[in-house]
Figure (tube, rainbow, N blue to C red):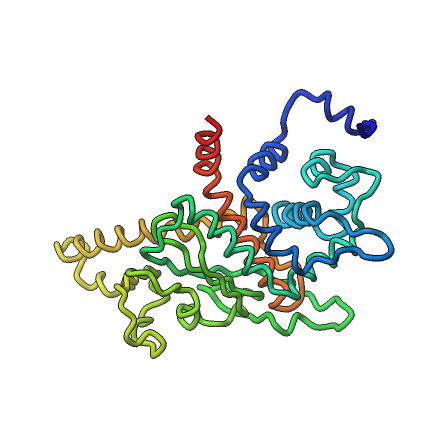
Length: 326
């Protein structure tokens, strides 16, 4: 048996579970670890010659904690030294903690082999097997993610792959995450990341899986059904009407009230697409891109939306796991 450190002994004697600890306990039970390991293992170095590689499971767990808690590579290394619950979750000990370069190299491995989309597919397959993704309809939407506008870097320039756009009376600089979410569950099945100035309507074709019967979207997607890439697509387009199209009838008219009820019903369905945005921005604290360039940020965003699916479905998964044990 490995000797307990002072930090471990102190942690073992504490009486209250923190929110971070409870979060990790839940995530440990709902993440499809074996599926993710099988995805990454063919690309993971075996550590032949020299110092052996860290266990793949440990590095995967460290990578997911980076996404959940917003740690940079140096901050993740320090957190593993400082926080017992993070070491326990990753299966590491103080005797051997991966340094920031090792953590960086693991992320680059995932980026090089474009495994973020594979992570999303593995998680969605796992959820689909448990009846959590019906794929009958798709809701499409997009959200802006800020990028640093400062030029105080070695190049003296803003990120050339990020762009500025105007929303209302406010200008934004950064990227845009376009998603396709299941109409019934709100779980994300498709993610495309572009510069902020790319029009939402141009990305819809990449957000549909082809099996849906209905596509829902807000008024920003008006006219999407007329685009050539959707010619012959057999779906019902439920696009929100612009307010000006029914305000002209007068608020007291029966027609206005009927149209308002229809739009309210559409909005209640579309509201589900806001849940993944809330999770990555509020639960995971992702409000600003961490890297330069679209490819690296896209990999992180796809991973975050995959993890948001697990977070949103966790109660169902935990209940199912409890039923299986009984």
